[in-house]
Length: 258
Image (cartoon, rainbow, N blue to C red; front, side, top):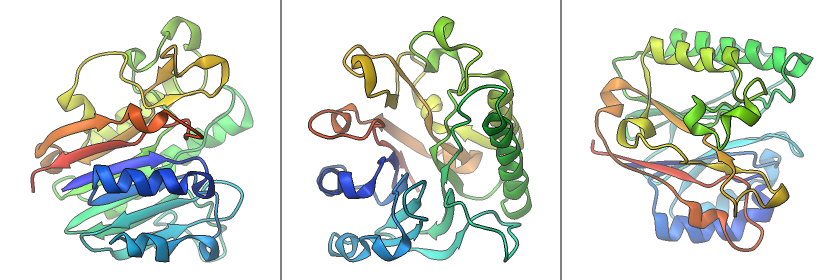
């Protein structure tokens, strides 16, 4: 079962590239982030024509998450599991069950600047996410959280730690939130297969960062141990970051032998 994740940074702008990628990468499940569409404008019919059921949680200009599946799509839930009816869904979380695997597409807030109100809100959001997972998930069952975490787990996941340490995405409180998820029972699947540094999933559009390989690994698949132990192959597809009008993120996929 091939499960992939991709921050597409506007589905309208990337749709031809996504259709091309689905054709050659053939994921069974694809989690999307930053679709930047309302639910009414989500191209469900186009994905259906390619053989994928889909679910989407969007709010228009910002955020937006989706799950595409060609192996079933059940028990779809948008937002936090403890979300009150009157609470505004920020279009950052979408849950579904695909062939017995509980899948969560997640787009973690950016945080902007360490110490800012946006950064503090990011830490609160991450804590709420962890508590929600603890309430509805079992570390002994098949569960995977895929998406743009806006956190580089450690220094080898950043092109130059000396230039970014202390900034958002690499601060100790953010990384501690990831470690707390791992302590509960989640595994950074990519790292079980590849231990090398300089393996990135995001490169800023500015200053030729992609061509000079100044990136970060912030797109992750965190799986429960029973699922992570079945992983046989993973890839960050840099090819999809090349060419005309790419996202600033590359898709990542993991093959699980179920």
